[in-house]
Image (cartoon, rainbow, N blue to C red; front, side, top):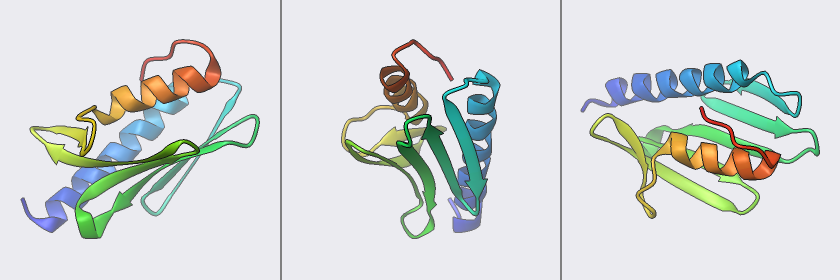
Length: 104
């Protein structure tokens, strides 16, 4: 897969994540998107950051408990250590943070 193609896939994924989170319309979530970086900020100031890592052709997710690197495989973003898909990871993390079940 060419580098330009993966960059377009990454940008499309970040835009899709922004749209999914925005549709939650949750009072305790603020979103900011700029230049390949999506910032999810909660009411208490905690931030989760999902961003493009062009050199590695990955999407990275940083949150207070750690960081995760996702590779694009078979049309999905899969964590390179746990084998968990990006959306499932965010569902789990955000649900735990908000104390309620959410599904992106």
